[in-house]
Image (tube, rainbow, N blue to C red; front, side):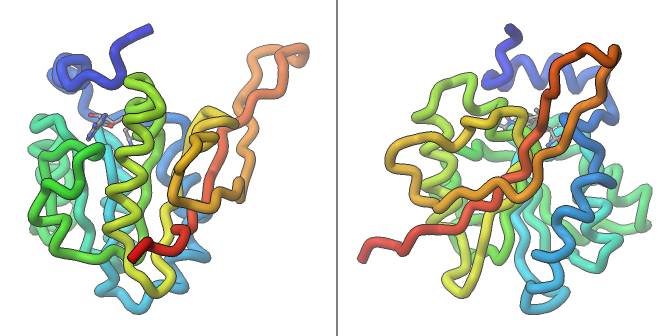
Length: 205
Ligand SMILES: C[S@@+](CC[C@H](N)C(=O)[O-])C[C@H]1O[C@@H](n2cnc3c(N)ncnc32)[C@H](O)[C@@H]1O
């Protein structure tokens, strides 16, 4: 199994990879996000996109009218490429690209100074889970502290039906959609990806 939790793995990969969508294309994710985007306070809502890699989800979110997006990845090649992708699509760079560890969000001033109305990740918690449940819990705790008190939520797409079965997770967890994966033969087993809605449990005083 590759070291999906290691920055060195992603660095090597992004030296040659320029575009790749994990689990589902962003164009499949966007309709799943739509009901949450509609509920945001406005087009200036703060969105946190964790582990964007070489996906184009942030471009699709900006196309949908949102630009207050903090795109975070711990691999600098991803942040460089993200800026280039946005400039190529829109002629300018309005979103934020932050090179940072998603398991240590509190230590990132550009993130801890904001409150986010929506946090999204597509298979980033999966990569982080290779370092164990404690790493996913650290990511979740940082997200919990970053979410806006008035209805902020985290939407996460994962290949695992058990991704958030973690004691002490500070979220109520719901699977909002099970996405069947393609089969190569009719006899292949049913395999799904899971779109989770994570609502923060009340913050402790
Ligand atoms: C499985 S890829 C998903 C990429 C993208 N979200 C997609 O759907 O195609 C995981 C991404 O998370 C990033 N990543 C992994 N661990 C991270 C961490 N601790 N902090 C920030 N980014 C991380 C990797 O660099 C990679 O871009």
